[in-house]
Each structure stands twice: as structure tokens, then as C-alpha cells.
Image 1 (tube, each protein chain N blue to C red):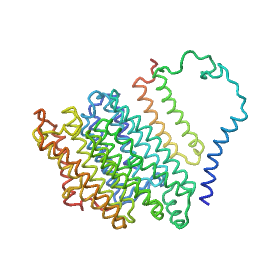
Image 2: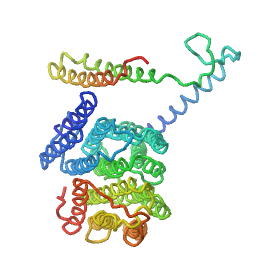
Image 3: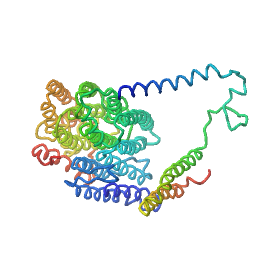
Image 4: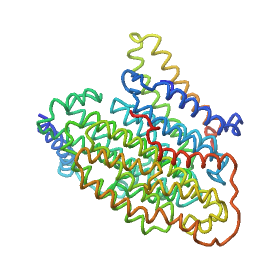
Length: 458
Length: 116
């Protein structure tokens, strides 16, 4: 299919940028490649085509999630010159790895075969291990890479064993065959199938960083270069949830009662651990790592909904969360390069240094905490209403309490930037393209908060 | 059906590993001498400790070797069905080898094939 081919060619072309000395144009090349892929992808809307001997089906769900991932990756590449100072001569390779990891994300949201799920997860994860260790001489970055690699490889083992057991029960990797089998045998308890479901659940919960499988997240998010952390927290999480929801909605919804208890407990633990631990963090990257754990907890609610509502809710939440966290991480990165600290006090007096940046910080924090008139509010609203429709009222009450806890720590940087005095009075200057991109992300956040209907139903 | 096969699978898995350990513990003759406890190094006597830093060049060669080793593994199934699949499969395998060739080209240009 054209999207995967376009992304692969872009990745390979980027790789050769460092050899045939066109490294200067590789960022432009990546943007063009990603734009082409987005155009190809949007042409598949409403077509529902199957590719590669029924290994992938590009339905509206795949098109929507794929577009979100590619747009976020393109936003990231615009900030290419901020990736890392000392490692600049590896720029073509870094861009190539980023583009190829998006390839993995596309496979993860459009698979119809468990082998393709495994392939997609691996393409994405292996790229992420490399990206986490980009700062070769930085101890934190090295730690992040090795920790992510060990944990990721371990969780992949669970995923593979789960796939094996499901193959043992249903004699097929194909999602449609598996879903037929599950539908026919939903009344009898089949422990082989259930063990497979449980192990796949463990593998995927690792990937979306839900408690109790979240221990790698803070260290990896803090150690990796900040721009790369933005990539992990947005594209990585959205693609993993895309894969997660697709599998459980398509195949295992007839036996929802068997695994809904696990998801409920995991969601509650994840929300509380994420939010309460984030309260105590001084380092902003670490705080956002815990907040991303909490967001994973909210997004797990969508898995429990019985009908198509869950898919729409998880898509809207992914867009809202992706846009806001992308701009939040980019701002943290800008502040970090300016002041040399990634703690909340780095934001002190931001409003005197750069008014636009302070405003964008406020908007993205409001959206992440779910205040009305921002995209984050409607994201939470759709998620919670889909869970209530399915009868999980208590769970939604706990989620609302957690949203209130979240407001406290999201407002720390906002308070710092508006009400504290800065140590230095340096004005932060941004390139015009960076300012335009950040303003574009903020406008998108507010626009989706006022007209949530802009996101089409899938 | 599923429950039984799961139990059988688990029992086989645990049993096989446990049995192999147990049998080797029981029937293997145990004679410990200095020669035997040394690290195996292609049959020649080892010199010094094995915890030394290796030249990174070994790893590069190992990686490149691995890529083409795996490529060969993919070529075998293609070769088996080549006659039935015809020209389509041939073009696909050429594309596959071409992409790997690009990888080799990259490694070559980056100087990974030069022994330091």
C-alpha cells in the first residue's frame, strides 16, 4: 500500500543523505515524504481496502489514527535543528529512524493479522530504543536506551507467547477468523484462549505504559532527548492504543466480561499512580511522564465500551492529548535549552521573556487538565460518556477525581510563568516557523474544544 | 479442549526443561579439573581473563553478517515456490535484495567494512 511504501522510500532516501551529501535537505525531504504519505492515506478514507494478502485492512479507523501519527511526526521534524547540539552530524540517520518508526505505527493501526501486529510493534519499538539513546555521551540517555530496550524486549516476549496461545486455541492469526471463533465459543470458558488474551494484554499494557507495567516510563522519558520524549509520549502511545483497541474490539468483545475486570483494576491503579506520583515531581519531564501514565489510564476506559463509541472517543482523546503534549514537550525543550534546567522553576517569568510562549503553555496545560473550551475537555467527555453508556459509573467517578488531581500539577508551569519573577531577563527568540507551528497547535486545541464535530466519526 | 491443551502445554514445557536438568544432573559423570573449568575458546588454551574490551569492529562485522544470514533464510522459501509464483515473486525478491543491498552500500560508505 502506498503509505507504507512512501514512508519506507523516504526513510531510505534520508539514510543516504549523509553519504551522497544532501544532508541539508533531508528535513525538507522527510516533511515532503510525510505529506505525500498523509495525502495517500487520506485517499483511502471510506474505501476499506485490504492489502498484502489480507494482512492489513485500511478502514476509516486506520486512516484516522495513521494520519494523527504522521501529522505529529511531521510537527516534530520541523523542530529538527533542536534535536541535539553535539550529535548534529547524525541528522539524516535520526530523521530516517523517525520516519521508519512512523511506518511501524501505520502497521500497528491497520493490521488484520496478529503477525502484522507483532511486526508493527517491533518496528516502532526498535526505532524507539535507538532514538532514546541519541545523546551518546549523556549518561541519562544511555540509561534510558538500555532500560527501554530490556523492558521492551521482555514485554515483547509476553506479546509473542500470547499470540502463540491464541493461535493454539483458534488455529489462525487472522483477526476475522479469531473473532468468529470467539463469537462461537463465547459461552464456554476456554483457558487456552483466555491465557493468550491475558498475555497479549500484559504485552500491550507494557507498551502503553499502564501500571503496574509503567516502571520504565519515568526514566526513559527523563533520559531521552526532550524532542524524542515528545515523540514517545504522542506517536508511541497513540499507535499502541490504536493497536490495543483494534485487537480487543474486533476480536475479544464477545468475552468482554472475562477481561473487563483486569482492565478496570489496571485503569484505576494507573490513574492514581500516575496522578499522585506526578504531584511530587520537581523535574518537568518526569512529571509529564507520570501524567502520560495517567492519560493511559483514562484511555483504557474506552476499551470497555461495547460499541463504536469507544473508537470515536479514543480517536478524539488521542488527537487532543497528542496536540497538547506535543506543544508542552516542545516548550519544555525550548526552556531547557534557554535556561539549562528542565524543572518547573525554569518557567519562572516566562511571560516577560516571550508572551506567545507563555500563552501557548497555558493553553496546552488547560487542555491536558481537561478544562472546557479546549480539546482535552471534549476528549475526556467522550471517553467518560462512552464508559458510562456501558455502565461503568464508579470507574468514571474515580476518573473525574483524578482529573481534579491533575489540575494541580498541570498549573505549576502556568503559575511559574505568569506569577513568578525570572532570574534572568533574556528574551527567548524563536524561528518564525516554530512560532507558527506552536500557534497552529494551540489554535487546533481551542478549535477542537469549541467544535468537537471537526473530527469525523469512524 | 482448550483447557486440556493449555495444561498439557504447560506440563510439557515445565517437564521438558526440568527433566533435561534432572537427567543431566543424575547420569552425567562429574569430573572437575582446571582444564575443564576454563572458558572454551575454540579449543586453544585461553590467555588472560575473558572480561576484556573487544574491538568494536567485530560487532560491525557480526551485524552485517547477520543481516545477510537472515536474508538467506528468506530466500529459501522463495526458491521453493519460485516456479509456481512466477515473475511476481521474482520481482518482489529482487526488491527485497535491493533494499538489503542499499544497507550494505550504506555500511560500506560509512567505512564499516574497513578493518581498523
